[in-house]
Image (cartoon, rainbow, N blue to C red; front, side):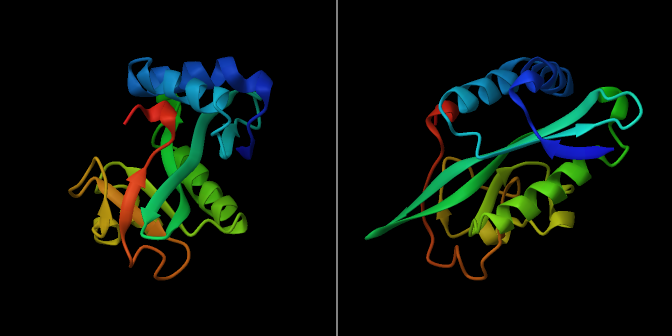
Length: 166
């Protein structure tokens, strides 16, 4: 498996992967809106080395955390998708790890996500790290990973990219 940056010619395959992974087109349309708005900050794909087919994708978009006198720009991880016939093969994990590394390289202070509370902690995400944030979501599925220690300690109000519609 090769993890690489998504290219414009990957758009149709990514749409198919995301729609099939989620069983609906909502998340695929989100990816297209984020791209159209210029908010696909990190977009990676997993490519099968033997067939050359795309088997997974992940997207990170800018996420503002507004605080008195400042705005911290973090990243939202959404969505990560793996073709159903390749789920449980480590594709999603590889995409998430590669995305986190690119986020570190880009000096993002934190990554925020809404996801399965039994899955994402293995990558360092936790609900406790997101507790200080005022967001449209809460609870064990709303998680954060601080790439810069203490980045979220001061809290703030979360503002997603416009494509999310929240």
